[in-house]
Image (tube, rainbow, N blue to C red; front, side, top):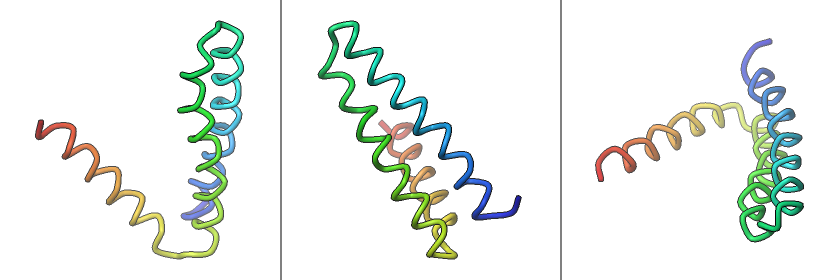
Length: 75
């Protein structure tokens, strides 16, 4: 698969993994920690939609990833 199909397909298992993580945290009594996973789970379909409708969104995702890594490493 070519871009943007490959990242869109890769996001689908991420949604399932985030859902499972939220359920496991809830069962372990750590409900408040599950919110992070729920947020990621909800952001994934938005990214999937943007990848389908905006041709340059893959480049934006790469830029945001590098920007976040730079912030983390420059501290």
